[in-house]
Length: 161
Image 1 (cartoon, rainbow, N blue to C red):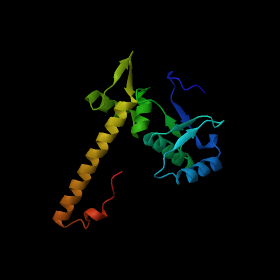
Image 2 (spheres, helix red, strand yellow):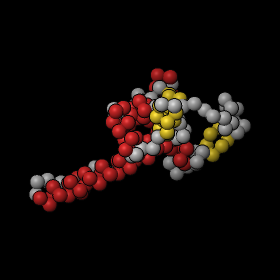
Image 3 (cartoon, rainbow, N blue to C red):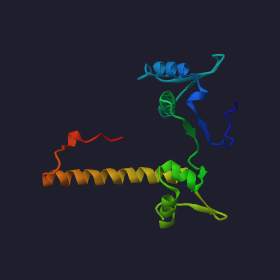
Image 4 (cartoon, helix red, strand yellow):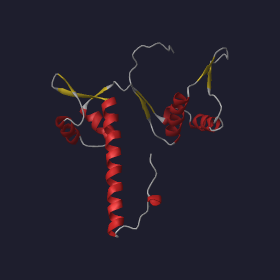
């Protein structure tokens, strides 16, 4: 496989395509790497490349998802998605997504008569929405505590993810 900068198409990897024992063994091995530099070694052992921590973290997350029976899609953030794919990504109906697009909440471009949304814009919207939702929930919990109708302390609230 060539590692050139050629344009790659998004690809989904499914747990059924990879031996589950190999995934489990990989996870066991990477759990022991904390504090050490991870490396990638060529099949013949002639080349050893140090993996940057963020890239190694991606491998951990992919392995964890596959181990839990979840598929993983690898796609550049510049990928253009249809409104249906974008709605699926956000976990909402297509009509609801179209309303977000038309209101200006999420940028899009027209290709002929069809709307296209970049993955980057969807990720930014999702992150912004999550932050806003947490702020509203914390405010509601605080107001509930102050009114005496909610028996919840900050320590009882779920951690940030």
